[in-house]
Amino acid sequence: CAESVAYGRQFQVPVVLDMRDMWPDIFVNVAPRPLRPLARRLLRPLFRAARDACAGATAITGITDAFVNWGLERGNRQRTALDRSFAMGYASTAPEPDAVRQAEAFWDHQGLTGDGSQWLACFFGTFGRQFDLDTVLEAARETERRGKPIRWVLCGSGDRLEHYRQRSRGLGNVVLPGWVDAAAIYVLMRRAKVGLDPLPARFDFLATINNKAIEYLSASLPIVSSPAAGVLAELLSREQCGRSYAQGDAIGLADLLSRLCDDTAERQRLATNAGRVFGNCFRAENVYGDMVAYFGTVVESWQRHSRPTRTAA
Image 1 (cartoon, rainbow, N blue to C red):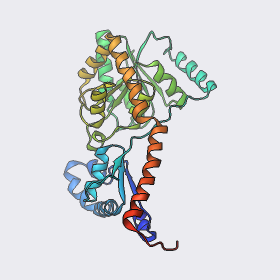
Image 2 (image 1 turned 60 degrees about the vertical axis):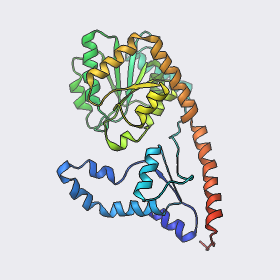
Image 3 (image 1 turned 30 degrees about the horizontal axis):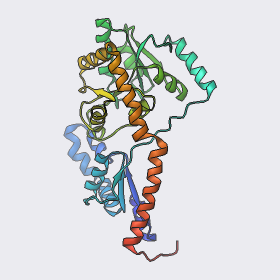
Image 4 (image 1 turned 180 degrees about the vertical axis):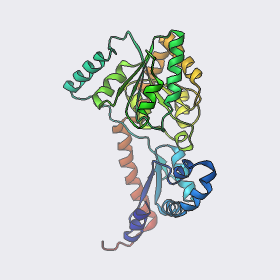
C-alpha cells in the first residue's frame, strides 16, 4: 500500500486503498497479553507504513463501514464522499451438472440425503484457531442429549482437525467429512437448514462480514453466528436473516438451533430474508458494477481538484 501511494504521488494518479485486514494491529493482538507492548514497539515500522499509506491515499474503501473508519483513523484523516464501503461480492453460479451429481452422490453416501427429512446445520472452513468449533461441538452434545434431530456437518481440514475428531467421539449427530470441493459445498448448503459462522469476539471480526456468511446467504441459508455483537450480528438482526449467540455459549447455541428446528415457519422466514439480502447487497454483478462506477467518480474528482501536471512514465 505504501508503495502504491508513492507510485501515485510520483506519476500523479489517484490511489484507492481497500481495507480487508487490520494489519498490523492483529499481529499485536495474537501476542500474549504481557508481550503486546513489546510487539507494538517491534512492529513500529509497519504501523508507520500503514499510517503513511492511509494518509496519502486518494480514497479509502473497505468491506464494511467499520473497516473504512479504521483506515481513516489509521491515516488520521476525515471522511469524504469518496471514502466508501463495498461488500464482498459473491457469484452464485451453479457448478457443472456432472459435478453436482457427483456431489449429491457423495452426500447421499454420507447419509445426508436431499429429501428434506433431515435437519442439517453446516459449516465450511479451516479447522484452526480462527473459528470456535469447540463451542459448536458442546452444543451438538447438548442437542443430542435433548433428543433433537439436528445433524452438525463440519467440513474442512487444518491443524486442529484431529482435536475436533477427538472432541466429537461418541457423538452420533456430528459428521466430519474433511475437506470438500465447491460442488459439495453448493449441494450441502441447499440441503442444510442453517449455516454456522462461529467467530471469536476479536476486534477485526466484530467489524467484518466474512466470505462464509455471504456464501450462506447466496443459498438462502439462514446464518447462525457468534459473537452476538458486531457488524454481522447487526445485519442478521436488522434484516432477520439469521441469529447470533454469545461466543462460548454452547447452551445458547443449542437453544437457538432447537427453537429453529421446532419452528419450521420461523426458519423459512429467515431463509426467505437471507435470499433477499444476498440479492440486494452481495450479488457480485451488482457489487462490482457499483465499484466500477465508483472508480470513475474517483478519477473525475481527482482530476477536478488536483489539476495534475502529467509526467512521463
